[in-house]
Length: 601
Figure (cartoon, rainbow, N blue to C red):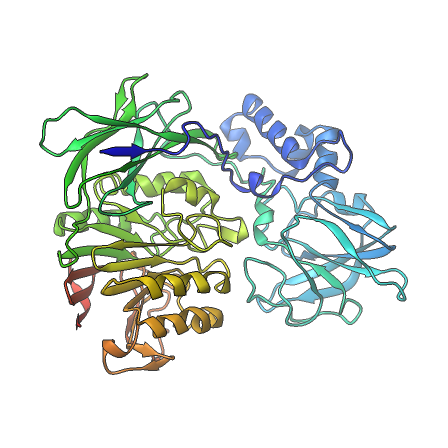
């Protein structure tokens, strides 16, 4: 047997908003950055304030706590760019924000009578300030978490000038133009400007993300996890990042006192000596997690395993003498005709009904080979306490059966990215180059090809890779999973339909599993958006969630594409594959079958 692990101590800090965007270089060589100010303030707060005081912070309390140098960083080093001519900067501030950003009036911005609106009905008041050629330095959105972040536009003071904007920070945000129909937030491109005053039309607009409002979230931002880390291994999880017949990836968590971790494993029931692999770990920080700011997450991959074999294993720290209980896993059979059972869920959102149903499915279907989730595993992907709850609900299941996950908008909420999500799972790194590793991937289990796509990223960046995967597989059955459904009563997601849908049709993907909208829908077999008589002629799209939600119960008008749709039930999707025969069922927690399709090829 062989085994491998990633580097043993790669200390990558995976934060909530802070490390994602607050890497701003100082405008002056020795000036404090926003990231440095945040770290200093939070560390000092933990040293001097009680939990009750942290939870009770308001704007006045934060200002009384920070130093003048930190205040300067928050006021001038959050958002900046260079302009080559004198300009007027217009700042659009959403009127629902209760507290004005402290630096706005202090720095010379003046409120105008202009207003901008968008298609969600939000109204922005317009503040303006003249700047000379050179640096434009702007401050934070506020110490609260007001979700509609401000955005700015730039116009020359002299109408005969043209403005060139350079050295833009954050540098991965794009520049658009102010007009009706333009989008502002990179994480919500379908939210468009509606009313734009004539005075602002055509100006260069600096797009942003809504998640930046979370970055300096002292007010109402501190949280506690119900499952703080300890020296004992917790959250033991099986995934794959290689061949399902001969590899097994294993992850777990400890507190930061523990700096060593190993997996011990052997063929189940053999009584052999343990084989051992050293695990690498990642330091994870959730800045506002008051009772457990840091933890270590371990990862190891076993390789050279025998197909179709059950192994027993445990994880732990030899230095501390702390071990998990013994679990087992089974590698995939090398026989492509071997029967396969797997279970999928739509949104889970760390909901207790999902956790209870998950445990029930393993009792009811002990033959299940793996689980998969179509995104929105948790409510807020940058909050580790939500992941702690998720793993707490799944305790004892994902340590016995591998889990394959998919990124939902809540896992990468408000454009802040899926860094915390990626730290939780060791998934295949064979996805398309433009995306971070593990955001999209493909894996085969027996005669089933499973493809996970990232619908929170651009569909076009994944299309060529998706076609390559589909064109080169010999799998009998093809299942794609992603979060945003191309067929629903809410949004059509035209880019997904046109790019991915075309490939699903071309290579005959059997099932597309999605979530996002909280009701159940199974489509007719679809080809080029048109219903077909037989599954042999089209792709079946399924949208589902794992917990009951009544919001759509009274509002599900018939749709030409839908064969079945209903609301109010939490469901799991059971796939039973044997050679050229597939049985699909949607079941509730009691095991009642609410939908079924049988396909034979």
